[in-house]
Length: 208
Image (tube, rainbow, N blue to C red; front, side, top):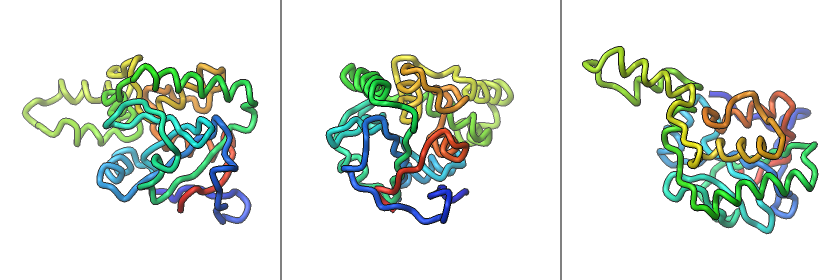
């Protein structure tokens, strides 16, 4: 599993405070909890979650137990052992507001968590996830093909969101394509990849 990239110049992370964040910033994170480890293992990722900084000390995120919510940054990263902030450098205040408004709309609508989409993202990034999701040999080829189809977004629901899907959808609606991966088959690691490719800028670590 790859170590999450830090600064491109000297490899040393920067300690970042909440006051340095701007609306539209992206926070990728991971915890020591079992579900986080499972997500990282299944998706071959260095992180297991992503959230959007909305300003005013709050983030908007899609979490399995609650769906899309807006809550305090402190609460969102409380259990994290790693939290890294990225920024799209050309976003501007207007489009940043549009990104946040889209994500907040889904939070106010009480959008549910997209379990099917999350499974599809896992399959797209690691086809062996099918072996975990459908371990019954007697069912055979039919379910194997069905599982593989998850990676195309076949199980994605437009009114539901998981973490990276929510962020990429909000940016896409504001006219910003952070990655070539479709929101509904993305993983948090795709946001790390967007940084590696120069689309996102590393701002610093909230926790490390």
